[in-house]
Image 1: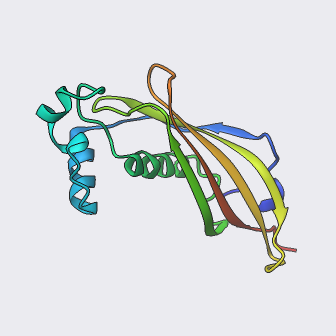
Image 2: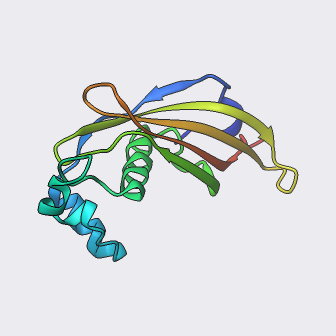
Length: 148
């Protein structure tokens, strides 16, 4: 079981396991979403760009960050809903990069509409194997309160 609303504390932080991003990830994500932009799918095109090689889709990085944070098991069975998210992409994630997420609680407040829940806001920082920040995100969830 994950953490209940009352068990979170502002400033609390966790570091996820890591994961290496593969060509398979980029091709599958492109096929699944229909986003075939050449920055993600055309190695020859990318040789002439500032990146020099294919890069991961921003939304792929956000999705991987979500999956990596889930592996922390802090929300297993206690999150009722995702209320919103925002992402900024600072450095490219390339094929072969190994990423992990640092997840930090930034805000807690009781839900006005659901007395059995509270709102938990967390910052996500996606880092690569060189400790470079690739993306930063903010995800807000509705979390269960402890049963009385």
